Image (cartoon, rainbow, N blue to C red; front, side, top):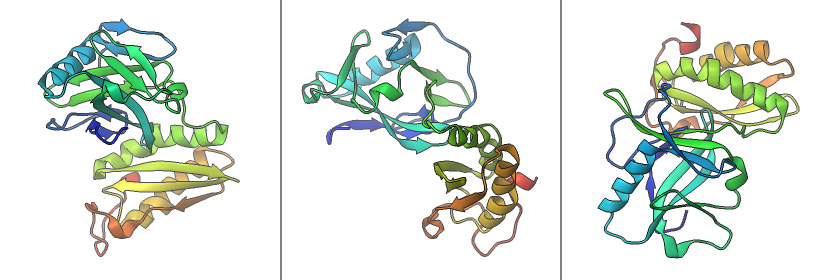
Length: 237
């Protein structure tokens, strides 16, 4: 993003606003859509009107919405949405007319978000932008298999303790992972890793020989259990 872009905060596949309710990753009903080139993105009418409303409240004029990938998180990619002056569009940006505003996508992000849909969901339990991306962040089939186990099995379990697991890479049968949220710095992190995550990945992904935790647990801000506490792993419940 450009230095003066004002981000809409991201979390995993969900993005929420600067003063939002909490974010949740529950599935939602499909809403009517306003479609743009299938090779790029699709916005629901709800998402488009929400963005237009936020733009109208911004004191700056002639804004565009910048959409970019900002690393990896639970579920695959992490995303960033933010308003930026249209005049700051880069020659390499791909600009999409979204019906009342331009969406700017940098050249590195563009091929990774082909076919993406962006929705806005607001219920009593959740509020935020939901992004569905059919593209895997991994080209390696072994890494893809590890990511599926994280998405479908491990992350839903550790979410009970406010945590999530991110895959950094798979190299020569070794999966390098990082723990976040309530799992970072948690007193039961080693148990969750060795008796939960490692066991399940080795069972469900033939070819995985070892799991390496690259987490900096010393900077964990909100561990579910303090480092000195005993407890139980969410993967052993």
